[in-house]
Image 1 (cartoon, rainbow, N blue to C red):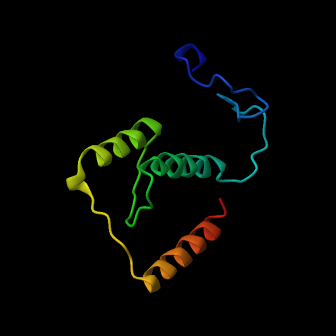
Image 2 (image 1 turned 90 degrees about the vertical axis):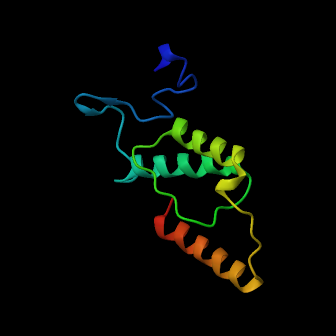
Image 3 (image 1 turned 45 degrees about the horizontal axis):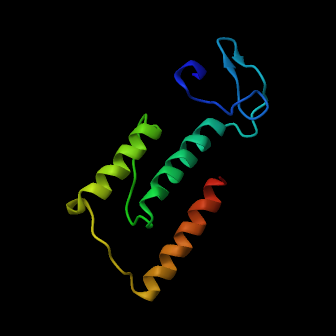
Length: 107
């Protein structure tokens, strides 16, 4: 990946190194650490929209390129979305739901 100009700041001190035999510099902090990383990547990339999303996101074998392509498409084509203002009670419920979802996933 370094030859491709990627992972320039990565080292065995700040990433997990995988080999054919398994994890070289474990142990993992969480059994689902790889999934957590992918979810955080998606959340971070979608934050580029600059607005919260009221909807459902399904990502299957996605990565930064797909996430940022989605963000670009959404920003480019305003027929794909609408901006809404939730009533106060719905904002409170949405905020509570977001907090519960984040706590439940323990990211």
